[in-house]
Length: 265
Image (cartoon, rainbow, N blue to C red; front, top):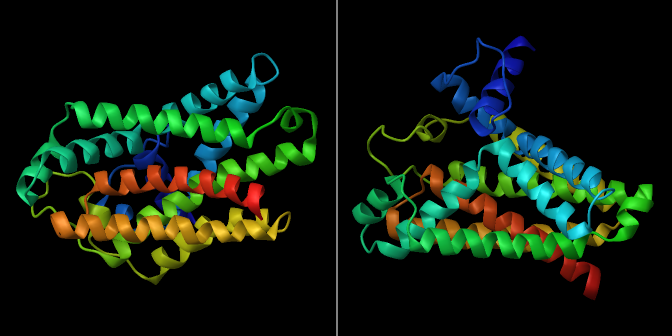
């Protein structure tokens, strides 16, 4: 149990800005094992985002509350995944060879493709979240609990989609310049099982209220499949930025799919 707590706190420290015990560091062995808790981190980020949204909704408009919830999530992760999304937009938008793409993604500066991509991503995420929540979310406890599960499930299943690329593809960079490389080297069935358990559990709980929502697995993992294939085509694998971009895209696909199911099924 003590070792598992250490691994969990390693994941928490690596993927968020939440303070951790002083004895936690970026131990490569624990970073490898920390991938099993990546979707569990989504529970925390999604929960914090919802609490910020829910609390703010009593003071400001729902639209403003949604923005506050988004800000809370970004502050919790330090824009870790959004930064990866921006780097992927810059790298694949401006590079035409593997070497050039990887070089651009390694650059800390954000370019036009990245800036435009992040702005459009935030606008789309804001609009989708605004459509998911209503005034009833605040006044009805059951409705609020459903939205809480949606926030958590969106973050957990998108992280599962991202980390699953580690299980099926090779890390692209041949050097050790990326801090994400240790989690990309080795994994066991425990990492795979843990990731799928924590990634799918919130959605399974949500399906008790509306079983049709299980269908969101299809578009989310279709998006994951095509993104992984695209990365493989251009850079022979993936990088940490690719995982961050996958998480962001799959999170948006999740919200879009939920709205589609509510409207048409």
